[in-house]
Amino acid sequence: MSLLTLNAESLIHRFFDNLHTTEEISSLDNLFDHKSVATLNRLDFRGVSDITSALQIFTTEESKWQIDRFMHIPNHLCILTTVMGRSQFHATSGGTPFNAVFFLEPVHRHSDRLMIRELLIMYDSRIDIGYYGYDPALQRRG
Image (cartoon, rainbow, N blue to C red; front, side):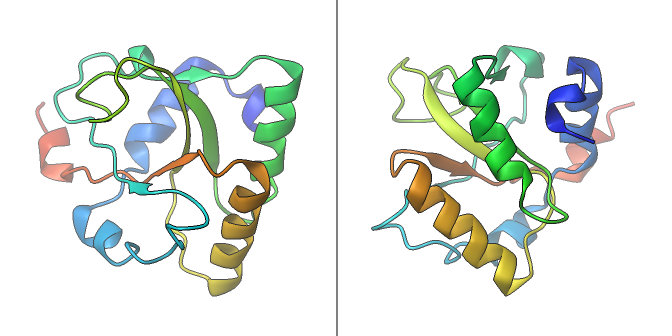
């Protein structure tokens, strides 16, 4: 299924269904060459009451192409978004929107990691990469 066919509700459910643990994220710290790609940003949405306020899926034709590019990564759902700069999302954004790629499933295969890295280099070195460091225990709040 193409990302573009997902409605907002199912997209949000996928976010919370596939959040990574902090332990998983720590093992991926050295996945990318920070000099040639971007600083690895682990965004944390704990305490955010409305996830939709944090995400804005691109709607322009150019951005649809960008999303489709990343959808070619096999077996990994990833979302290219614009996130409005707010302190709880990104400490240095200063209120300015920035591009971000969020991988909602673990990226363990070396070939997948290399493909992602090459796509990011080709796309834009200013892009930010987000893995979620979310404590599943906080999700069990009834």
